[in-house]
Length: 412
Image 1 (cartoon, rainbow, N blue to C red):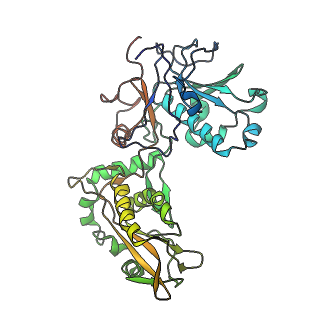
Image 2 (cartoon, rainbow, N blue to C red; image 1 turned 90 degrees about the vertical axis):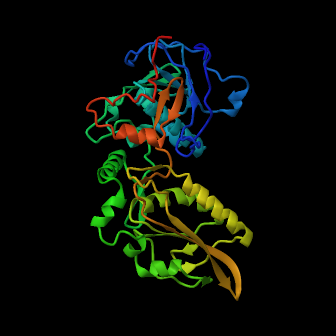
Image 3 (cartoon, rainbow, N blue to C red; image 1 turned 45 degrees about the vertical axis):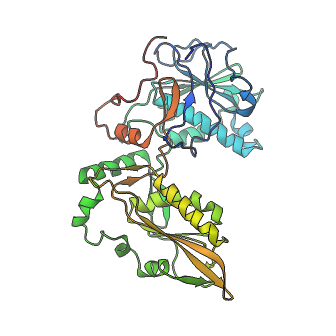
């Protein structure tokens, strides 16, 4: 790869897109040297451009800026609207969200890659840092505790610079900085995402017990998920048919999730719910129930659609990232059924019922939202890499993984 050729990055949503390999590759070049990022002079770059005619198709991207005085990795994130008031007045809320996400991804990448500089071109021409603030403070606080410890800011003419220091593993067990773990558990009546330290604690418990298959012998009643759950949930799951608008007698709970969703939304619900049930004690997902009115409604679908939907559900669940500490290496166990809803003697809709059994080890809803620079690319850690790094018990700085190249391995 030529050092003088700025590379472009596809506009992606880092929180939702996961390729089969678990990595979203963002080509960038690497600056020479390894000094700590410090505020300093900045020269206007003439090399920040996308290749060919792709600029119009890629409104937001991360590219390398080589025309600075920093001997450090510099990631440019393009045009960003800054200032608390200006960002609140943005009419395009999706653009506002994407801007915050791409800056968060760039910051995360640099934290896990030895530090560096995030460079943004200020879109609003009347912006002044000392007067208007950044407008992204809440985003930074959400993803990074003690922001003052890791981030410094400076405005240089039409550019805004975020100086990022390297991530320091802390007592909570976080070896790498993570935007989202995508690891869920059930708590009362909802699925909630665990923070990094809690996931590490869970994983270490699984490693110590060699999975939950071995620990079940000391926990009577845990061999079958049904034994943990109320009898009426089991009965409802095994029903042969329903009557339109008949009532049901349960609500959301630790073992039951109720959704009134159209057929096309079912696959969006699955990852978080399956992860949560599998990591807790199993449970049931009922789709097509009106929880407020406690009525069975169902969703519209042709008989021929159900076979395809069943296949898509299976594929979705089989693609969920899992981590094993046991010898059995089991797959996620679940049962899916489509129950007819009758109205005046004819089928008018269907209810999808999904029973998820407790998993032996750990199930993620998606690859952890955690980024780093490997070689000359910005990559998302795979679940396997993320777990291996987070389980590393070496004190101090995280131990170098031989399978992951450092962002700056030699002088260019």
